[in-house]
Image (cartoon, rainbow, N blue to C red; front, side, top):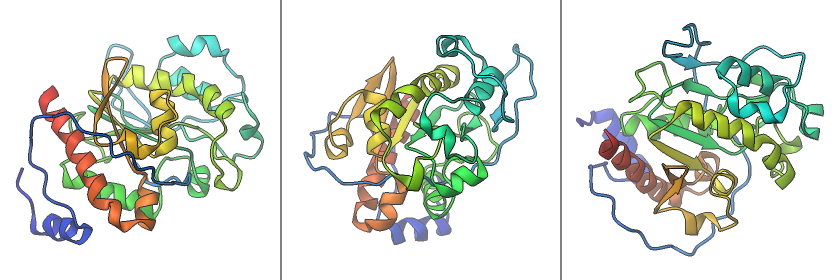
Length: 266
């Protein structure tokens, strides 16, 4: 990959090294837990799928509110439109009472890399899109540095982004286990539909939900996990990195690991 001068200056400002493809090796646990709060970030520009079931859906965008709530048992067999409608009309937990709208997720429906965040924040709740704001800009820069984007692009370059929770917890509090459990079928189905080659879990709650563990993020990152046949890389949430600049270099290492896995999967 050829690095532009702009990218080199940005990476130098972040205090990270340039990505070079490498073989994935075993990593030791760091054994250090880093506290994180639940804040969402980036903005992704997408449009509703216009193809038939036989064609590639392309990009996914939030669907209009649905009047009915689909039975949870049906989620595992839903296609994209049905899943979007089910999320928009979901009233499975108390978060539906305080939300402005649900945040379904956006990006390429066949993205090679899928990013899973934690829960929507205030701006995500207002805009109906995951990862907006300053943390989203940071994520955009980091993705751009390894040749990825959330703007419209082929599946190898455009990511898909979703959150563990589809509704904002009041005052951006941490997700409750019952809320995560009730949202899990939606996220599971999104992963099944995208079929990503690599999943990047951003933040402690996203990582713990995906991997069904209560281990701290310091022990989960810097190694490759497996979830239903897909490799999972754990890293810090961009909102956390804005408050803890020293860990940007570690997050860059995690992105390099995910990029290496993508290279090996081609």
